[in-house]
Length: 141
Image 1 (cartoon, rainbow, N blue to C red):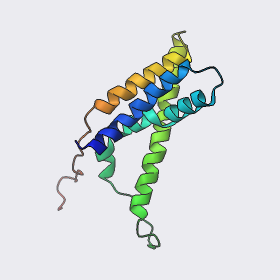
Image 2: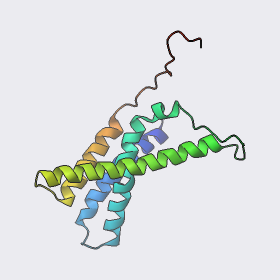
Image 3: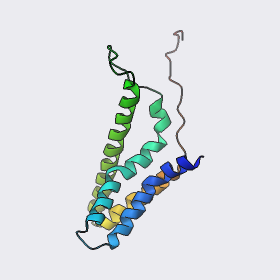
């Protein structure tokens, strides 16, 4: 693992621990809100998406018939990863919040701590291997 890969892997958990430490700032602080929003919007999703990245890269984007943008596939894949990161993060925040509400133990600190621990664990998980595409039996490849 290169140092650059290590930094990219450690960035989402670092954001979570930074957001947790921002809880010590006074209520209504701009830095506190910015740290929370930045982590909750992208941190958990980025860590979880990193695990399944190779599987997503197996199927590139299908471009339009007319090739106006030579880098369509690359831009489309980047947009797909960005949107999946945000949507996964929002889904994990809602799931954690719902679990704590259902157990009558909801607090923002608990949700943030849970998501930070989940993000840290996901950052240290190995990536899934991409399996080759399956072909139908009896067909020539």
